[in-house]
Image (cartoon, rainbow, N blue to C red):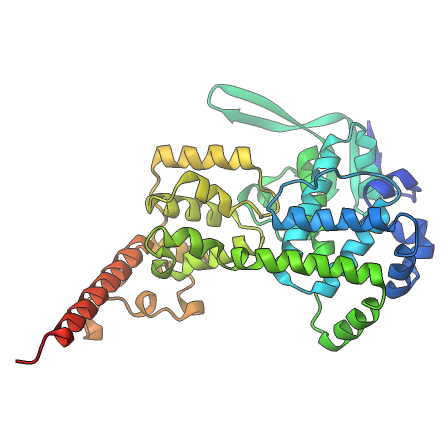
Length: 408
Ligand code: SF4
């Protein structure tokens, strides 16, 4: 039996309280939606639940700064809408890319977990409808192929198919191999997706909604913060978040440097293609499949501990600690060789031009450009840099010893 979303369905208040990022928030809570932000803030902090709302928002930031994978004590009630809107306003006021990424990843992961726990598939259907996705629902689910792992053969079925334009819109930042349209069952312009995939796509929608709070208009931002800070409760909450961030900021800025310093300041020896991926992971951006494989294989080849490699992925949107640990341990057992430069170039992951890196661009071995050798492997980059740094230290030490010798 197939149901197709064609007409307008009204969404319940309960669903909006649970998922306040849904577009119908604007119509159901029209009174809130039409208010200027400072008026909304003023009302929140003059109402009896203001302490509760502020504490819940603060918890989201605490959890995001502490790298948690779910919001602790997350409650679904009618205050949830206020919590969500206040969160958005504070992200706008903070206007900090790293904070926004972390909060957006955490909040969207929380939404994913909630949707996964949904025992009513019709709620997922209502969510898709509210998001204006062109979607078909199948009951019973349609068979879409077989998943074969060693001797195990699992029949794959899908309850949903989504119009390919909507699929591409939602999946545009998820460039993993298995999400490519060519790897999906596509019939009459509709992509068949399993529930988990559909929910993951919706998670990406939620994440992008929060990311959109960043602004370049510094003057309006300053005026807004001045105005909002006149509201005592808001100022207290905003200041608390800033204090929390000040305490943790350094850790975030130096996450990689700190850990890597125990490995002889290895970060200074890493090639641009690795630095670029580490930066993306640190900002909580999605990593494509090849970026994930490459960074894992390379860091393992440099003998980084499994826990360290896993922690690199901890703030990216679809992080699952158990799964990632299993995959990194598996890669360690298999002892894979990291991609060489030519492969990285063909995958678009070589960053030599972007970073204008001399070793990558001009090679090594001789002053004479015609005799210089081309760099072939990122591990070669690390070895050469290490050699140069050791040699530099040795020469500097000798120079110091020479200068300290008494004159004869
Ligand atoms: S030349 Fe090789 S080591 Fe350098 S950035 Fe490109 S792929 Fe990485």
